[in-house]
Amino acid sequence: MNQAVAPPTSGAPELSIPRLLAGQKALVTGANSGIGQGVALALGQAGADVAVNYVVDDDAAQSVIDKLHGFGVKAMKIKADVSDEDQVAAMFKQAINAFGTIDILVNNAGLQRDSAFHDMTLEQWNKVISVNLTGQFLCAREAVREFTRRGVIPEVSCAAGKIICMSSVHQEIPWAGHANYASSKGGIKMLMESLAQEVASLKIRVNAIAPGAIRTPINTNAWNTKEAYKALMTLVPYGRIGEPEDIARAAVWLASDQSDYVVGTTLFVDGGMTLAPGFATGG
Ligand code: BGC
Image (cartoon, rainbow, N blue to C red; front, side):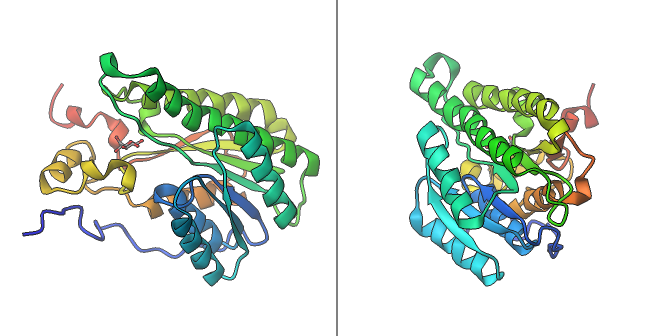
């Protein structure tokens, strides 16, 4: 019998995406799979043109582009390693040349290189910090430069630009065996808040989303067997795994003028994972 467990729908609602972003231009990093793919598609459904960044798997990026075209928006794929300064600069140049500007950056690209601490190599440490944290710095810097150059165009948005940093519940929850990853996410929290404080007066809004356990390739082992899914659910009070669409809807809202007064906030989208679930029956 098939042991796969997180049920295909997991009870997540199917909701349509409101067209809150018509006429805006977005760049989503790591948009060829997982949460990034879900966010890129939702921004397109909300009416934004979308630049799809990826570093591996050209076919997957192309299929995101094809789906975006199906929503009647412009879409382009851009291969670039977010931890490489020159490639990031070239990526923004390409997107801005094609779209005219960028209004929304979703700093999503991230990875894990898990290891017991005493065995963790410097390479594993550096890889995670450079993609997850330095990558967000490099992309945010290019975005801020473009937002500042252009300023507010009231017909498009009340803000000069929006940056959404993809963090994790592990910006708060320590994670044994994942010291590099948790450190990168703790770093994203302070990067996001410091930047938000610095550029708010320029009408640039910087916020973060902290996803919990979302059904994506990064954590397949946490949900693809009955035992794993059951163990995972002891950490999720809401009783289901998250879907990329759960994060995508939050991203659409944070990118839109509906959240205009939301500045420097981390929105936890985690089914209650950060509520110390063990205390529901103990303590
Ligand atoms: C990690 C996943 C993990 C989730 C909850 C995410 O940030 O990438 O692997 O399942 O946090 O622990």
